[in-house]
Image (cartoon, rainbow, N blue to C red; front, side, top):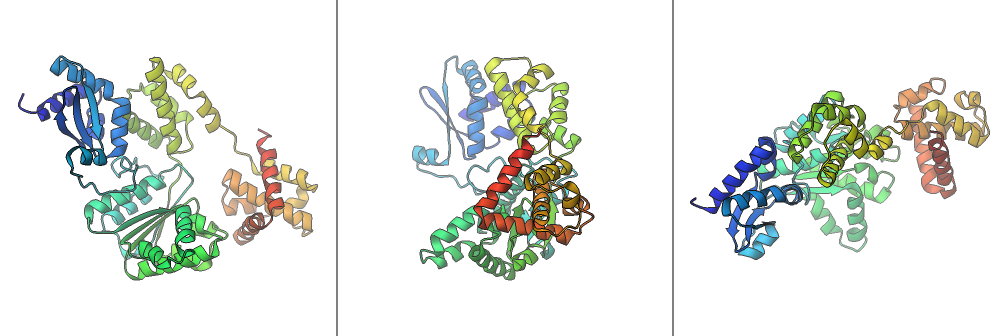
Length: 439
């Protein structure tokens, strides 16, 4: 045995015999051997996400392999960049995305028909091969479907491709907080330099700026500065620009200048692929029947699938139970209940709204312009959109075929009134509770 690197190779070979080669390659590709102390084998991993996962799931197996090699019990220390700097006085350079985002790369993103366009566009932008028509890239879809994963992946890949570029990632609400803290304290130039000097600006959940007049003005000028300089902008949102009812028209137009790509809930085949991919990475060996059971029952989004696998892993680790459909069903029973929670139908929402406002269903669905009828109709449209995710066109069909613009006007009016009138906001909250109580 010539070096500590040889020892580590033996350890990896033994891990591959216990887990899949994909698992070992995925989690241990960024591990370096530092040294062997009196009682510990010291490793380095600059990727905190992987470091934490290795410590949580693989420490026991690494220790067992080391004991076979040295015939002695050794601890395993894994140092992150800061710890290695303190240990050796050298900090390795690992450019990439925001802290904690290390595991979210293009390689770990599972592609399906529901996200294929968004993935391809994100990769093109990250590698600098996108045409000008991709600026901005606007990715939209419900929570938990991989929008943030794609932003992180863009950041990591772009940092590798263009190491000299300034990449700025920010959440929509943090952009607002920065504005309040810096601009209002007289440090506007510092704020503008932070965002307008970016070669790549990534904004997650841009919908939060809607309705905030001064913030929208600032973002408008930031957008213009970057766009005119030919710098790339990538935005994510839970809805397309035309459905952001409180968004400034100038921003709405600019958000639609480039490429808009939606992400939708994964279909059965994609869910199967996601489960197999995540299970392999986590070192879980799932029977096909269990994989299929999870794919059939956890259907809403990728985040729920990942949460389900974490629960299964914990159940397995803590109880040592055999993984079959029955044990998995027990392990994720609470998640299944949440996932299968009913989605209220438009008929139920309209019925409860009629009851609350004291109007009949024919009135609310028809053309009556009385004040109570109009209020009830607009609130019904808003609740249908929020609780059932019907499209604007589908909502209009529930109300004598009202057109897209009429429904959009109603949504804007309800959102505006909720912001300005706390009592009205409580009314909508009460109605929502009443509808949920009908399940």
